[in-house]
Image 1 (cartoon, rainbow, N blue to C red):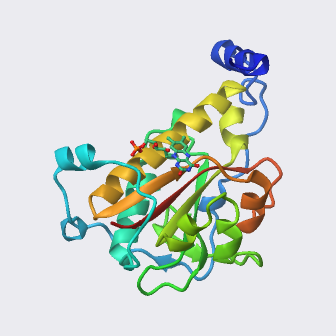
Image 2 (spheres, rainbow, N blue to C red):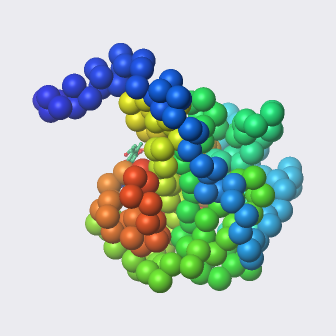
Length: 243
Ligand SMILES: Cc1cc2nc3c(=O)[nH]c(=O)nc-3n(C[C@H](O)[C@H](O)[C@H](O)COP(=O)(O)O)c2cc1C
């Protein structure tokens, strides 16, 4: 049985067309975190045809399945670059609008990508943040950023400890709610689904497997990657490793 408040929430978000900050004439929220300049960026290589192991799209679709155990082989930097490109990379910029390799309601792209890197050639272990506009990553300075802290956010931590990389997607609702009002909540979760599906498919092309993770301890996940913004929250996670 669906809980009554869930039905109310869905009905409200399905029908409500008003309530956005934009319509109320409120100022646009500040620039996205991922657009702000940072130091010590690690610029990622561009994706080339050489990075693909399996570029046959039919096989990639047909072989997509969840994988929860991984080899201890490292990912290369070009492989990490490929995964980031097709999940959150910028495809083109028109005027002030960023279009990425995934669709996003109103092209708001209100989800930031954090990575727990365990085994990627040339990178030290740690928590990183992806900067789509620069196609770069930056090591985050979070005191609790040990792999064990992120791993403890799920009931079976081994999957995260074994994975080469864990993607941690953080929703930043302010901008999408400003544009769409309460209906923006719906779009946030839909956007997250597109991102993770692209991760499954991109990983399939480089002989990696993925496990989407929706079951995690919210507060612990937020603390483990050092998110201080009150309204931002971890919306979805996914482990990746070699088959
Ligand atoms: C929204 C969502 C949340 C999920 N959360 C978890 C999770 O927390 N832990 C897990 O082991 N698998 C999780 N999965 C993976 C599903 O269990 C898996 O997709 C399902 O069993 C179907 O298997 P398949 O992906 O191989 O087709 C999740 C999948 C989705 C789409």
